[in-house]
Image 1 (cartoon, rainbow, N blue to C red):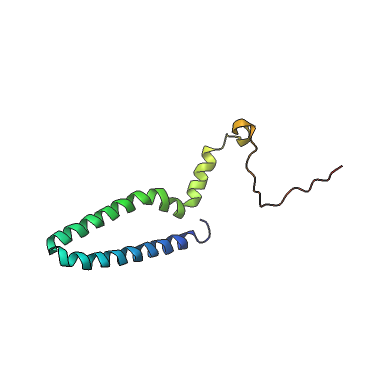
Image 2: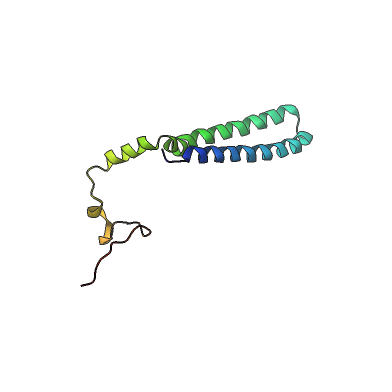
Length: 109
């Protein structure tokens, strides 16, 4: 697991929940004057169901790889075991290297 990734995820989820709470509290005061109790309950249940579906879809795509990064890295190593990246580069392009890393010191002769 990368350093700080669960913390960043929890910070984001806390922020998203606070924004959603703020939006819903404003919506509730507006709708309370317009709608009856039954239709408001139905709308809150609909919004809650939509949020649950979106959360259920997002979990395997975003949250699970963040929480179980070592498992996904091992799967990638197994899937890419027989592949040499230099051989499959399109158009004779050079394999990516870090432009900010240390450069090789070559002497001009």
